[in-house]
Length: 329
Ligand code: PBG
Image 1 (cartoon, rainbow, N blue to C red):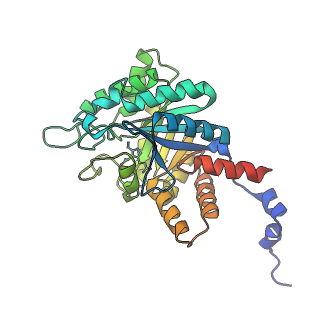
Image 2 (cartoon, rainbow, N blue to C red):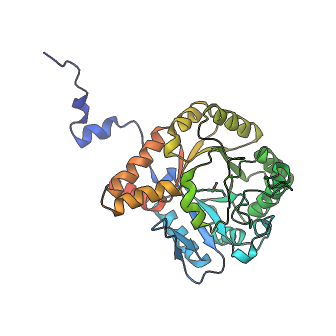
Image 3 (cartoon, rainbow, N blue to C red):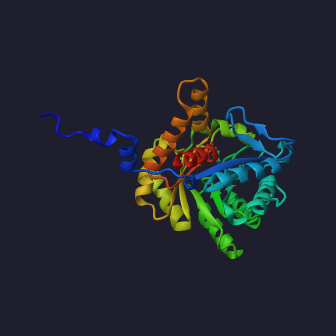
């Protein structure tokens, strides 16, 4: 008799498949990135990210409450200042009345400690040149001058009620500088989500529209080269040594190999960011009727979990949380 090995036996019924599933996906694993924009009268849909909006403070609060009741594990907030409020050093990022800090205070008031509130700790939304830091004379991003700005931004965000700071700028030493400053200011409980392995990616495209970025050029002198693997382990090791509470790999789907390697060695929880371009690709294909939207989204999220992510930042977090909750019934 041939074959003697029949792996299909355990795939025959939904009950058998459920019994032997190795990977789980739950609402608490998902974090919803959100955009709050200054000077908007009503929420505005981001055209390259159908279904995702730039929020007003009021619509932000409502969408956040909905996401939390769907069961998401957290919210990651990005600020979109008015173009006229941008400048070379990103002053709006450190201003307590800048849009991101106002958004954080609003969510903190609305939700308190009922959800994990995260803030993007990076200058690119607030600089008129669109880079993640301040520029030196020669136009390059000045690492150490940028760290001083990140420290002030981190303190303003901690004061505004953020539980976790998402250091996404890829400057050397940013985690250590921020940790030291938080501790000195009695913010010892404010945690750091380090974008440890963040690659210069073409898939960030729609995010530029989402935050009204004015970037000319690229971020290749500070974000990682997609050719590299080993470098990610170095970045993760440095961030953990500097005090990162969670490390992240970003983007997710084109970097699942990196995610697996990081998950295998990390001593802290590992997150992955399913970024704007990943959202837009699946959304566009589904809108054309080329793929089944729900199935494709859930498969992509399960794959990111399987590759080793404890936590996934995804623009589908609230919707997927509802699907997952309903499928439990
Ligand atoms: C930097 C930042 C970016 C994203 C998150 N934080 C843009 C970039 O690095 O160019 C991208 C997220 C996405 O594409 O969904 N503040």
